[in-house]
Length: 160
Image (cartoon, rainbow, N blue to C red; front, side, top):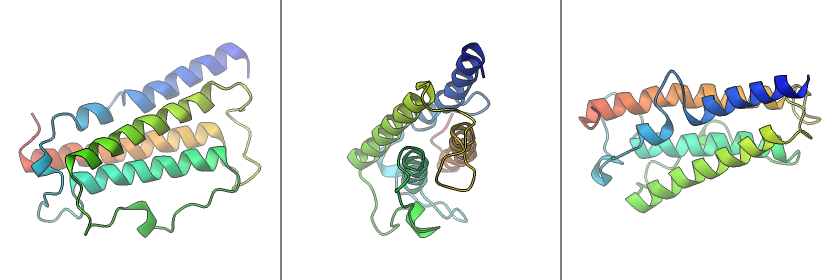
């Protein structure tokens, strides 16, 4: 792939990761959430805003580390990808989760920019995954859960 094509693809992937395009960005979906709503349950919804956001952090971190470290061991599925529901979050914990998501997203974007990392070459570890696929996986996973986050905020009456 020539440098211009790579640069265009990377720019599009970054847009998906940061802006969301067809859905709210994480920053928009998590803006102005009252601390009292972080752990509030809604009937028929199996997670809170806090649990959903922490799930996004855990999953994105897993994908990042898989891409960076061939010896990384993923959490146990599915329990390891969700926080303990018995441990509610306060506002500081929620803000730390959002900061960790932004930090890991920036680290992933650094991988995308690094010409040493071929976007299409399968990782030597794994089952054929490549950096392009993992970027799209993060974007796809996040977009799915952004919709849930916005819906949960609507159900709680804290979305305009």
